[in-house]
Length: 468
Image (cartoon, rainbow, N blue to C red):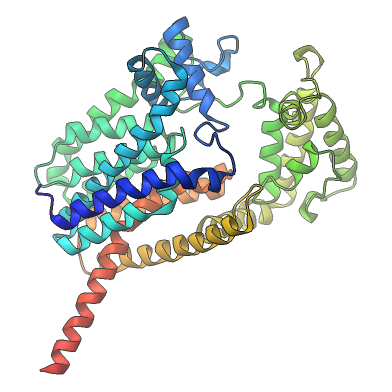
């Protein structure tokens, strides 16, 4: 497809603003100089380095669950760069953000072409590309060695080949498989794609969608197949229970706290920093809950392996808890008992109120965590407000598109993915970070761009009629 002057300008703008943020803005936003390497980075790195140097894909070769901790998509991306860089890890970690910047600029091209294919409007395509080009929540993650940028690139690449006039469903399926192996939540779009095409035209469904699904399955299927054949466990997603900070004490705490409220703070910080823990009113359902919580907090600080790692990270003088001395099982039993109590005796709060508050958080989040300056927090709040308006307007655009019978397959895919993923995240998984919502947010740029251009066109037509 021909690159217009306007698109070329948008692509150049995308390169410039991402480079400027990487060189000058990221350290201010994240509040650290080495912002590219963050909490989860090394688990992807360790997994691929263990495969390259020790012939085992695992974040920790001594832990049986660590063989299933991370699907291999992003780790293999790191590994390819690592091999090209001559097995130089520091150089690899410097190169990856630059590659992610380039891939994200290509994503601008993808979203332009997707919009043009769906709406047959150059203006809408230009606006969609410009929105993605300047979308701050995308730009932020190009600088960090996390899977967000690569997964968005792969998702948009898959949809690019799915919606283009000369469809290439094999490539689309392959890219979708790689996207899911990079970020598991993208899996929710696969059944939505299949259902959208099935209900749109059942006669044409079988052959093209079978082609898409087979190519997707060949890529994604290598992960559960590897787990079954090599480790005798059929794991389709991942296993977080790998010890260290991801030990049973911390995981059971997370399950419990998300059963009573939408966030793990301030209780997590209060436990780690040895402060008085203030539990919400919903935590006290029967006599003995207060004493049990107090006992469990004491155990977390004294002999919880997971909490021990977090405490050690903040206070290096505190020694880690030995495997033989931990009380993870008791902590997990206590938190699991309290979680079960919430499910049985506080059903309204557990099944309805907390999930709806999660949904409110997803749509109307307005603040950032961490020790950031007042300027950064104010700017972030304004950007979150922009995100909220964009999401709501994008959803309204989907409704209008459906009513006007425009691109109904695409509308079904975008809205279905949004609904299923938000529902799973808010009602089931519950551990919410805005970066987990990026794939759905990015797809809503398409109906938002159409809504803006369509509204401008209608206004112009009304003015012309008045002039006549």
